[in-house]
Every structure is written in structure tokens, then in C-alpha cells.
Amino acid sequence: MAAEIAARLRVMIDEGELPPGARIDEKEMCMAFDVSKTPLREALKVLVAEGRMTHRQYIGYRVAAIDLDDLASTFEILHGLEAMAGELLQKRVSAAQVAAIGAQHRRMMECHNAGKRLEYFRLNQQIHQMIVDAAGNPVLSNIYATLMSKVHRGRGAANTDILRWSESMDEHEEILAALEDPAHANLPQILRAHSENTAREVLAVLHRARVKAPAGTPANTPAAGEADLMPEMSGEPVEVAGSDRI
Image (cartoon, one colour):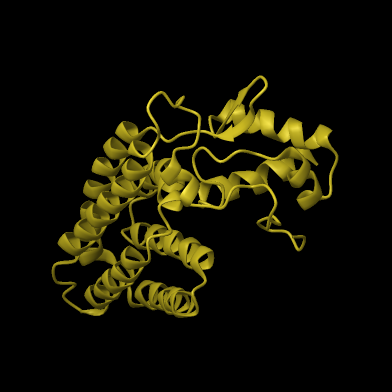
């Protein structure tokens, strides 16, 4: 039971449903998951151990802040990996792999047009991994997957910017066009530019949230901007990822 709750909360944190600094209302969470406080608290302790949450006596549980310096450094490495994948794709990608990526791309576009942000975000993540996997280098794929897991929460927390959402969709159209081009012209540069644009926006959104915090605000207290990323978890129903309950 606790493991299942932890898994659901992990998704909510990583995909931005629970943004940095969000307070966990245990009573509402118990109602949302239809569980008692014991398994919920066991799950929260697991997430504290993972660094996704913090706990302070008399304050309770909050979603942990994101280390922006570490996030920026991770993105820098990912830019290079995207470009490397592009170079390998120019030599190795098959028509079947391009078709599979194209099919997933069309599903992502449907989610974009329907305003299904979380579904779009999940498909976006899958497409990026599919592209790197198609480069045919298992070591590159594993390193990329590991580093993407590190930036996943930052990307999720910044996944509320509507303008960047549309820009990202346009960039994915450009990526697909380059994949479908038999020469795969400029694919490394296109992939790197998309990665850099994503990093720039994610870091800008999170930085704006951080600097809005009042002077003297503890690191684990939500900044005003961070709270704006998601309504406070009190007084409103909580939709639980992967659950039919609300």
C-alpha cells in the first residue's frame, strides 16, 4: 500500500502536479487515496529519503526545492547528448523507427490540441527517449535516460508555460521533419537547439518562482511563484495521478 502511494506521489511531483514547496495536507491526501495516515506517512518518508520531499516538525511535509545549479549542469550535458544522438541518427535511423516516432508525435499533437498537458508531457518524454534509442548506442541511451530522470521534475514544474508549450510543439515538428528527410539535414543542430530552448525556459520559470520568495523565507517554504504553479492543497479536491478517485 505505502509503495503504491509513494509511486503515485512520485509521479505527481515529477510531472509538476505537486510543485516545489507545495504543502502536503495529510487529511486531504488520505481522502484522495482512500487510505489511513499510516501508509501515507510511510510513503512520505520514502519520498523524503529520495530527496523529493522535506519534513519539519510542526510544519509537516513539503515538496523539496529543486537545485537550480545542478539542474543547469545536467541540462548542459543533455545538450551534447542530444547533438551526439543526432549525428548517429544521420547514419543509423531506420524508416521503421522514424515511422514509430512519427506515430507517437501525432498522438502528442492530439494531446496538445486538446489541452491535455500531462498526457502531452508524458508522450514528449517518451519521444525524446525513442529518438535517442534510435541512435543505436545502448550506453548513450542509458546515460541519457539517467540524466533525463534528473531534470524530469524541473521540466514538470515548469510545464505550465503556455507560450513555451506551443514553441516546443513547433520544434518537435521541425525534429520530425528532419528525421523524415532522407538526408536528416541539420538534425544534430535542431535537437541541440530544442534542448537548449527547453532548458532556458525551465530554468527561467523556476528562477522566477525562487526570487519571488519573501526575504528570510526558509529554503523549503514555497515561494509565491512556486505556489502559483499549482493551487494550494487545501479546500479543493485533489486529483490523484493514476487513480479514479478525486
